[in-house]
Amino acid sequence: MLLLARELLQQNVDIRNQLQERIHHLLIDEYQDTNPLQLSLIQLLASPQCQVCAVGDDDQAIYAFRGANIENILRFEQDFAPCRVIKLEENYRSYQNILTAAHGVISKNPHRKGKKLFSNLGPGNKIKVLECEDGSKEAETVALNIHDDLHKRGMPAHNIALLYRANPQSRLFEESLRQQAIPYKIVGGTSFFDTKEVKNLLAWLSLIDYPGNEMSFRRMVNFPARGIGHKTLERLVDNAPQAKQSFLAFSAAGAPGLDLKKTAQQSLISFAAPLFEAAQAAQKAHPRQMVAICERAIQDAGYKRWVAEEKDPKIRDRIREAHQGFFDALALFCEQYEEAKSNPRAHESIDTKRSVLRAFLQKLSLEDKEDLREEDKSKTSKGKVTLMSLHAAKGLEFEKVYLVGFEEGLLPHRRSLEESGDTGVQEERRLCYVGITRAKAQLVLSYAQWRRRRHERIKREPSRFLENIPAKTLDTPKPIEETEEETAFNAFASLKARLSKNEPVESHKEIS
Image: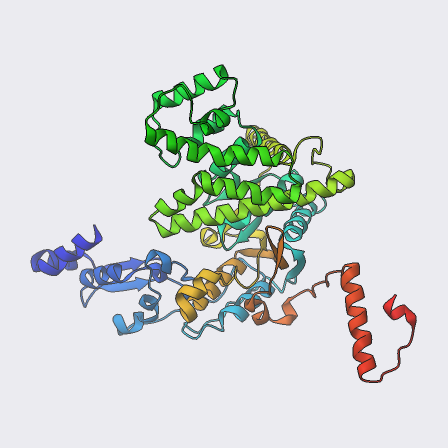
């Protein structure tokens, strides 16, 4: 539509003149989000006598991935000269500490209109920084803080938002909010556990846990497509019980007696055999071996083909991110399950009487039922905490904002840095600015020192944007308590350093 409209106005002088005579005033909102094609349309519609007014904020230009070009607003004075620029610098939403922090971040961008927001509301609360040991602790700490907001400070749930850079980050926070019985809603996205990618992974996993699961078998036996038609599927479902075998065992054996075509039979075996072998191995495996067993089986049963056949790179990335998050969740649960075996009080919600896979699936099933109960109560509910990505949050405001994952690789995002370099850093900085300025009264920034990948711990660094926030606006973060091993290591390191410098050691207590 835009291309044809531009072509019409370029090629038909009469129509262009008629429209220019009719249009005396042209107002364009959110000008920073316009693309080059829209700019050319504006220029074709506006005659030299036309009064053009553009409203926008170059510091909130965060939609380059949709084709928006920040140069449109930066070049406005040249494109529509002569013109007058009116800066709207008074902010009626946020307290000054929040605006000062936001300015500290955005002012480091080299190409922007010079402006600085101010508020007459007063300084307000200082910005709280939560330094957490790992991703799970970050989610747990944020959930406990929100629990206190609701039950100790009496804040309505709808006044609280939890913002993150990428949608897969929601998983850990969803789990922790559920554990605290805090109602929440996902805006501009889908709950991690409700996405197609995760539901497929759950179906594969449930077949490993219980090879006779008919619902999961029906869902996955022809995904990706294996040429197993509806009639063949019904025969499989009918004949497996008659053969006194589970659906997986019957299929892994090639569905004897069904006279399937060779290609269909081979396709069926390639799906069922890896899962059935994993199901047998899982019965004897240690909880820490479970992730490797299940992941390998699911890869062979169809996941690898699913990724390979997906042509859209964005969807392919989404599948991989879901896969990563799902198996990270399983790995963490396996560790917690093992701890609960020796100390039931450590994780009271984990049913160690069941197998680790059954306990994991049961936990997710109960959470889904809890979600349904919350939906039933939604009419009388006082509201829900809002979870959303930074992109989805633009234009919204909340009394209190938790901006989580405030670390290198997440904000700024690794992919943006790799693909766009300095331009990517600038857009990520604008995204950070948007996130900070969603807060009206209170802002909390959180980050993890470590992130888990399966049973491995990956060292993380705070976001470079944290260094740009003026210290006067921040609460001093509390240092993380060291483990006994870390304390001992640091004490011996200190002792070694002193001995190397021939400094006296005051007391044995220093290394006790």
